[in-house]
Picture 1 (cartoon, rainbow, N blue to C red):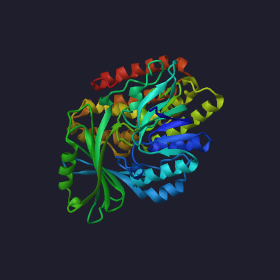
Picture 2: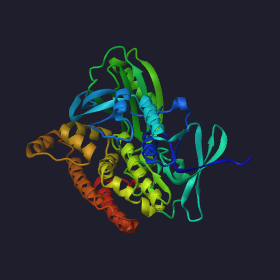
Picture 3: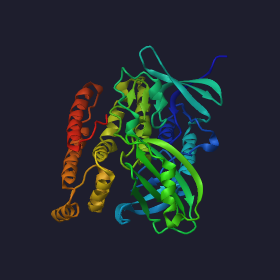
Picture 4: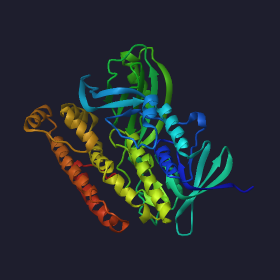
Length: 458
């Protein structure tokens, strides 16, 4: 029996943040759009996530944002970050400047899919993509899948890869003739695990997101959805020796008084990118968004706002390309520039600190982190740069005695981060100048590796 076949203007693979916002955008513009989600409908939105959204993260208004916040933003009073020193048990509390939130990720996921459907997109659950279809010129023309066990093919003018980290679409498609970034490996990713727990008494950090370094290169987190419902998890870099995530989390939970008698509501693991955004996330008839294109803060793992924004921008380019009858890589190209001159340049700069960290011991990193003034630490992790006055510099020098060589390296990393951001602002307007741009960027990276004493990440 031959496979059933469907034709759409846009096929979106994956029903997470990126997929839902991409589909809502194209459907709202009148394009025939379908989301292919591998999970059954009752599991929609059940995704491993830290659930924290720091600052006043803005979302595209293609969904009902008031409804989204009222229904799924369970804690909108996050005003500080707390870094716990596992060696001294000291805490560093840092005001965030802008109030953040913690969400109920499953309810959030249900709502954005509901909103995509309301905008006009079809939702095909229980649909597992197996392969990518391409024409003789290499243009992506859709995907092959199984839906509720039956073979089905989906043809499309544009295929949007929102399938998440280490996407199967990128494994199956031949993208060798495109600029699409294929310099991707497992070592650029993080393995994460989280549990949602109900605790007997309200915690005293329901206004904070709490971080604690692990013995390996990673961190534990405690993010309060409410004062008695906590998202607790951890992640580690896949460049490091494997750690038993569940056991490591359990050990820390058992050592904390607030979790005595806690009940586990949910548990889940995942992989996520802790790398710079893709240099190019477009090919003929093809766009990658969100985790599928590395649109995640490579230090904190935060990816919800970046996924929503990138998906909206990609969908806008797809709408224009389909309208013009040209879905080539060049026609979709400006999406790359949209991302890399916005949050993409910040994430690329932040990644330099991540690379530097891989060349240092966790104990040394902990000492330095707890000595750096709080706002400067927030700026480094959130913006990829920081600055401080003379008084703060002198205080930091005193408090980091014994680590001055590393502190000097960190200053050099900051300078490279500034240079890198400036270079990303010069991202080319067309594929013609792409190789020149990338070559200069790689020269900056070579200098960074020499400063950090780290192995090349890319």
